Image 1 (cartoon, each protein chain N blue to C red):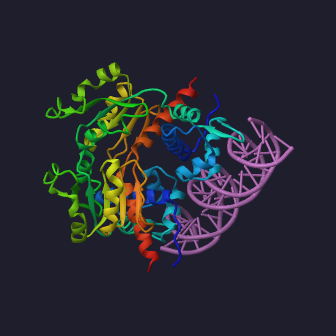
Image 2: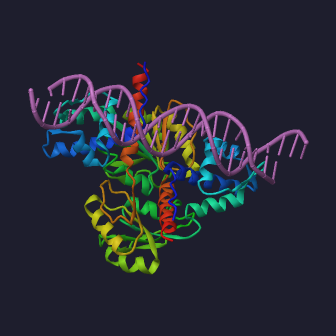
Image 3: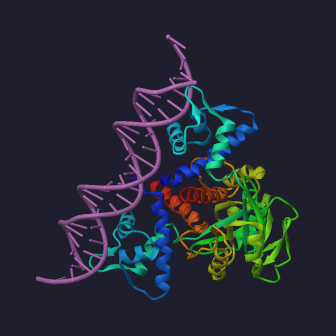
Amino acid sequence: MKTLRVPEATVTRMSIYSRFLERLDRNGITTISSNEIADGVGVSPAQVRKDLAYFGEFGTRGVGYNVQTLLKYTLRILGLDQTWQLAIVGAGNLGQALTTSRGFNARGFHVACVFDHDTRRVGQRIGQLLVQPLGQLPELAQKENIRIGVITVNNSMAQEVANIMVQSGVQAILNFAPITLRVPANIEIRNVDLSITLELLTFNLGLKAAQSL
Amino acid sequence: MKTLRVPEATVTRMSIYSRFLERLDRNGITTISSNEIADGVGVSPAQVRKDLAYFGEFGTRGVGYNVQTLLKYTLRILGLDQTWQLAIVGAGNLGQALTTSRGFNARGFHVACVFDHDTRRVGQRIGQLLVQPLGQLPELAQKENIRIGVITVNNSMAQEVANIMVQSGVQAILNFAPITLRVPANIEIRNVDLSITLELLTFNLGLKAAQSL
DNA sequence: TAGATTGTTAATCGATTAACAATC
DNA sequence: TAGATTGTTAATCGATTAACAATC
């Protein structure tokens, strides 16, 4: 049980390489070098080779990488060689957007059900799905083999929803409520805070303004 | 014109410190140490002091930091001592969610207008706002002093929308379309790709599964 | 003055890049 | 064999942490 220690930036780039390879594959390109991958996604060739080296030897010296083979490996590394059933809790605008979004319904991901606390929302149609009452989450999570829960409710409900998700056997949570949720250590959790992203922009604009003085 | 070089992680943490200070201030706390800030947000005290040191000396040795003063400084550093007018282009579910979201209507940010290409959406009400035709963007951007544009249209429209934004004098773009946009170098741009975030989760779940073998 | 906490320097840690031997 | 490109090692770069002098 050796613990593989991979920088998070490497994983992010694996995701980017993987999409790039998908595009190459669609365009019928069969072989590619680290140099071309680097050019294609905007990193250094050494970085590409180093990133891949965390996971194995996928290329052929003097030749390059087989696109299909490398694509298959990157998908497997990212855990995308299997299906991930998602449940979204919170059928407001954000929940609706994510339910039908391409990112959440591609590359192994599938939004299998949507829940809401509000009885007025229950029964509403979102894409192919009907909004389910929150009380149904434990049962449907079992039935649909939900492994990832997405929280798009407001702050006051978020912790309660997280608790229900954990009790329902969900393994990972993607949380859009801008609060810190408490979950057991074995649950993967990640927060998406768009306000911080906005503030990175305004910070940089401020820097620029200062530099042009 | 000395160029201030600050790690992006530091800026992200400044944003987090700033919110923490807001909470302290609301609770009437007047003084705080780097140790307490560190505890409150989950980083090391040395990190807190080092982060702040990029921007100045805000504390008093032997005493700590004045909450109100430090809050004011963090807000100024992040560029939040001014109002940032936003325009959202794409009045679908995501656009609607962001238009009325608290993160986009607090701490100096204000969604001033929403646009859509689709004539069926134009005139719709979102919160206080009416959806405007895309053609109105240049004029309204001027009139409303829009400095940040948010792109929530589909991939095929995103580049065109970015072009119009740039021509309209927008300084920064937050792009939710999962494609790489070409903009002039003086425009700040940032992509939000939720799929990559999802894949970080599945990668970690895969690691965990491998370790428990 | 004694106790506390900052701001800063030096040490450590980790990630990226450069360089090159291995090898197709 | 000559040319090309990988996989890996060593060098560099940058960020975090530890430690402590400065000072309230």
